[in-house]
Length: 69
Image 1 (tube, helix red, strand yellow):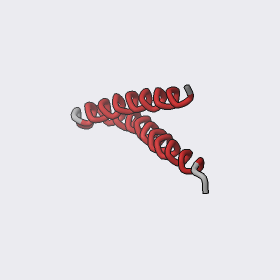
Image 2 (cartoon, helix red, strand yellow; image 1 turned 45 degrees about the vertical axis):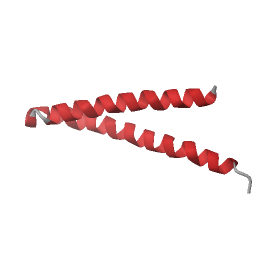
Image 3 (cartoon, one colour; image 1 turned 180 degrees about the vertical axis):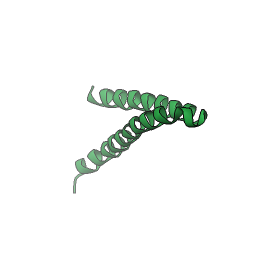
């Protein structure tokens, strides 16, 4: 059950991060008028990408620790 929860959290965060990145690219196409939103949403998307990277690599690091030496 814990594995399903982790996968659900990763999937949700990937969805939210993808939406934020789409907003950033959409605002970037507006030019200077979308700069403030692009900075805010880009900052949030950066946190999402960092979370996904840490959660994904931590998922496999936990498996390596369980292997018998």
